[in-house]
Image (cartoon, rainbow over all chains, first blue to last red; front, side):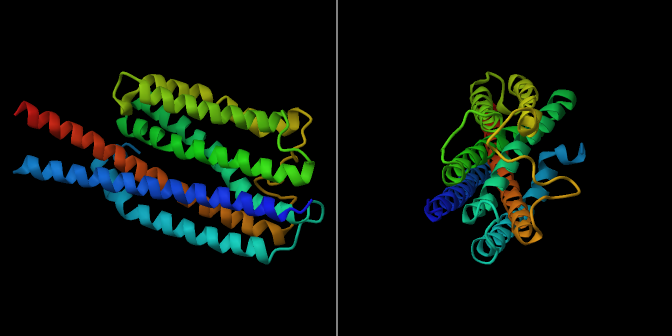
Length: 45
Length: 238
């Protein structure tokens, strides 16, 4: 059995999964920190 | 440790640390996987398919280490009642579940060309699947709790009890007959040849740093949410 397709699939799952999770976490963090900053500014006013 | 439980102090450290962990982890992952795919020789017994270990083993390590982190954070939350510990435990849960799932899928992809089967209900694979279900249970409990997320005692107790599965996973290949190979790397020795071992260690370090960056980002998002909630409450009362 040719192992190459299995190796490619395993690397794709691992890299796309971890990169996707990192990007999603970054995006959520940016949105929530910006919202917190805007609420803080409103409270200060 | 108590000093770092202060959210302002924590954020002062986490903000500059997040990009260093993220980009450092990405660089190490690339620096390990490229030679792992192109430079290192094939394994003497398993041939080319052993290259899957460079993604499978770090994922397995992070799935288990993630629950180890939940255990420590839950104990800190229950004993010292630090809300930041509850935030840390919740921030670990989703990436821990994701890496456990990656471990199971890549293990299945490794098993098919090596053992001739996608799945076997043996000790190692079944206990890793149980770990994934424990993560799902923890995530659901933390989300459903009536208490504020950062102080959910039910989730923390579940985090402590779920750790019983960690030694079962570790010793499963010793306790039961398994298709899975026995432990290859110990604290002081390894049965893997050095030519194949170094990319594995570098990849494990790289994925661990990336995991740390993901956890910090999720913690920062949760802290921002808590701050918004507190400020809106203050503004409503004023």
